[in-house]
Length: 95
Image 1: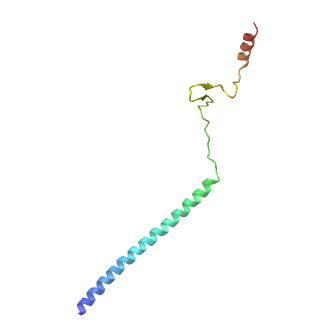
Image 2: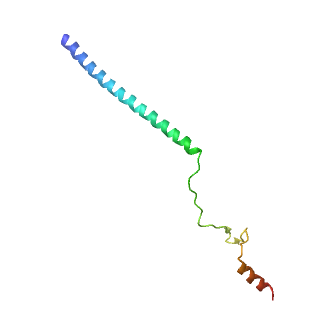
Image 3: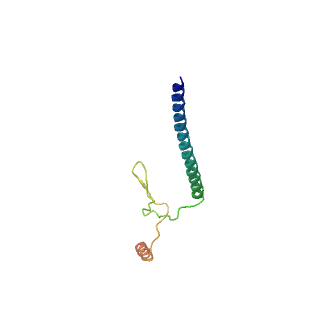
């Protein structure tokens, strides 16, 4: 009977030690996750108050409007003519 009790106590001590080790590992991982969450939250908070460093202009400036029927609408903003084009336009108007 004494041998059985000693054997049970030995197993219980071994299981308690394993459980204690696992608990310590989980607590350590939880602490690491808390630190990472705090760092991520701080990073997001800083990013919300800033604009991106560089802006890029769209190289494909397009103002054409095409209807479903296939008909195109004229440009809403008239094109700016150079002085040479203005001269040619005036010459074409005078017969």
